[in-house]
Length: 232
Image 1 (spheres, rainbow, N blue to C red):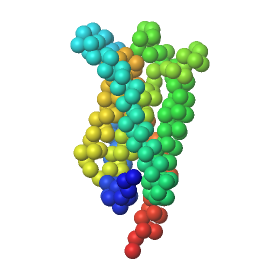
Image 2 (cartoon, rainbow, N blue to C red; image 1 turned 90 degrees about the vertical axis):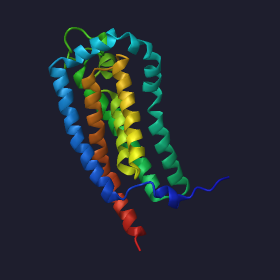
Image 3 (tube, rainbow, N blue to C red; image 1 turned 90 degrees about the horizontal axis):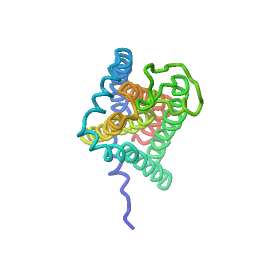
Image 4 (spheres, rainbow, N blue to C red; image 1 turned 180 degrees about the horizontal axis):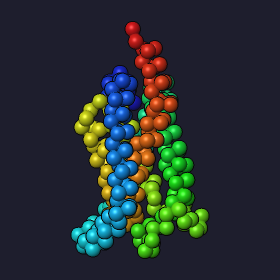
């Protein structure tokens, strides 16, 4: 059975100071994403883009790929952090365990709880089920509202995974690949008619914000203590 060299594995991570700097940049980007979501919704650019996508025959031919990736692409992040958490627990490695727990706290708080509370408040119909009006803040039936279009829970999910990896990983190439994987998930949600562009923009922004809260409240303080304890 191969032995995992944790000293080499830990070298793929930045230190807490560099990670904090990358997180601040991500939070600034999230403000632009919120603005893009608002403008897209208010100017009806959402509807125009949806109509263009629906009319594009080439995109329709690619629907099976986008459908498959939008559902399974997120497992890139799930499995990565599950493996990290398992390694942290089995090898009693404090940082790996803390990072893994932080990711799952962000998922539970963001993708499961917060996003569905916002969905209940918005009650926005999905593109294929939309009427002439968006129906914002007009919740009619709980079952419909909990699956409403705004914001995209897949986008929140993807943002949480991509930002964690982008903030933690030393390799810029790996960070860019994580971002590309997340963006392909949210693009797939738009191209298959599951969401409007403002839904995924807001979902990405919300995911970044959730990571910011979890990292500042939970991960970074513990990470600094781990670094201080390991310092000579």
